[in-house]
Image 1 (cartoon, one colour):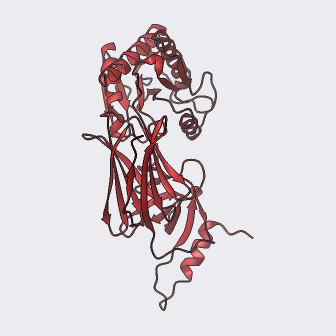
Image 2 (cartoon, one colour):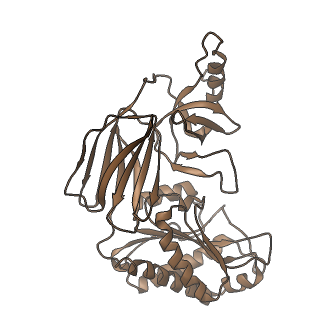
Image 3 (cartoon, rainbow, N blue to C red):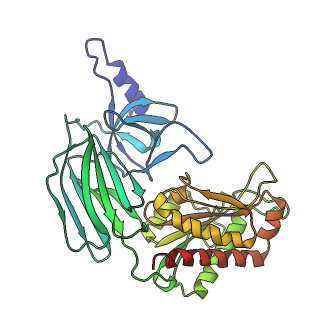
Length: 389
C-alpha cells in the first residue's frame, strides 16, 4: 500500500530518538503545474505572498507540515513554504554532505541570451529583477561555490555582465546585468545539471507591426468574476468586450501578431493561461479586469504589476486611462495575481473601473467607453515603447 506523504513524514519524525538527535527531514522533488515557493503561511484572496515559480524535479528538504503546506529548508538560514500537492517523495535520493556550483557559460543564439550555471544537483532558487541598474538576481540555496570560470561569448546581445558572490555559507547570489533599462523578461529552470536563465532581448523594432502582443480577457466560463449592479452582467462578459475592442485598435495601428487567451465565454484555468502564454512567448501582455468592492462608493481605475522591472508599462497605461476622467485607484506593485507572476514577458493587469460602483458601471456598459478604453491602452503602450527609443 502506498502511504501518503504526510504519513511517511510523521513516521520519519517518530524515528528520531534522544540517542539520535539529528533533525528529521524528508527528501522530496517538486512536481505539478507551476510549483511556487511562498514566504510564509499568510493568506489573502489570491493566496500567500510568493517568492516565485520553481522548476519541477527540484530537490526539497521537508522539515515540517501545516494543514495544506510543507515547510522546506532551503539552506541553513532560509525556509519557505510550498503546497503539498507540489511535492513528491524521493526515497531513492541520498543527500550529499555538500553541493557545488561549477563553471558558468554565458552565450547567445539568434534570439536569446543564456546564463548556464553548472550545479551538482537541482537545488532550490529564487530570482528577482532590479532597476537602476537593470539586472536579474538569482539566489541558489544549499550550495557552495566551486566556480572559477565564467565564460562570456561575443554572441551576447542583452546580457552585459555576469558575476556572483557567496553571500552565505550555503547561498550563491548570481548577478546578471542587462544592456537596456527596460526588462523584457526571462525564464529560469534546469536543463540537466545546469540552472539556465534565458534572457529576452529588447526587440529590434519597437512598433506594433513587429511585436507579438498578448491580450487576456479576465475570467470566463465557470470563473465569472464579479457582478454588476445595473445590467447584472458578470465581469467575464465585459472583459471579453474590452479585449476585442483592444484587439481592433491594435489592428488599426498595424499589429499583426496578437494572442488572445480567449475569444468566447470559455473556462481557462489561470495556471493553464500562464503556461499557454509562456509557450506563445509574447513581447508583452495586457490583462483586462473589472474591480469590485463591498463599499459601493469606491471607484476608479488601477494598474498592477508584481516585478519592478515591468512597472513602467503599468505606469504609462494608467496615466492614459486617467484621461477618461476616471478617478485614480492607484498603481499597485508586488501584486499576487497569476497573470502578473511570470517573469517571462512584461505584463500589465488593468482594472478598468468598479462594477460595484453605479457611476463606473454606467460607463463600463457603453460600447463607446469600451472603444475609448482600448484607444487609451494603445496610447499608454505607445508611450512606453517611445520612452525606450
